[in-house]
Length: 148
Image (cartoon, rainbow, N blue to C red; front, side, top):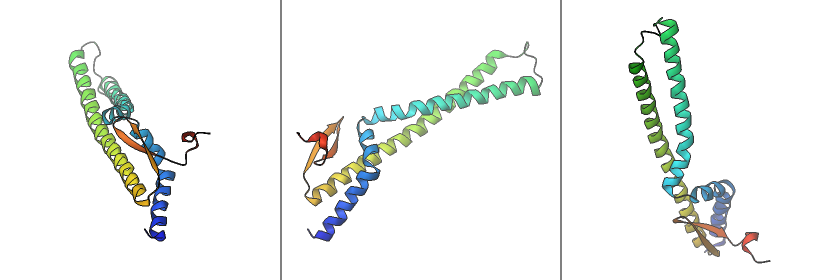
């Protein structure tokens, strides 16, 4: 391997280490379904909160603007509609968040695989550590890996 080619490969590795390695190692610490679930909890909470606020504004509008009588209002119909709206919003945001988290997880795995492939091309020594089902490189330059 030519020195120029090795320098280019090592530069690519250094850029990955600087900008993406920490987030990819955190992502790789999860199984895919666990990662999606962890990312979706926050999404679900805020989607529920937003839907509840919309339902609250709808109820305020119904009582204050439309002058609906609160004693003759069909609460069963209103609560069923509100619950259905919240469930639909939560389902939509869960699906969107799940697809987004799965995409981010797959991209992370591709970057790690590409990193390992480039590392093998350079001929550097590597040590692979398993997290879940996946492999993450831990280089030979980490102090905690060396015996002192």
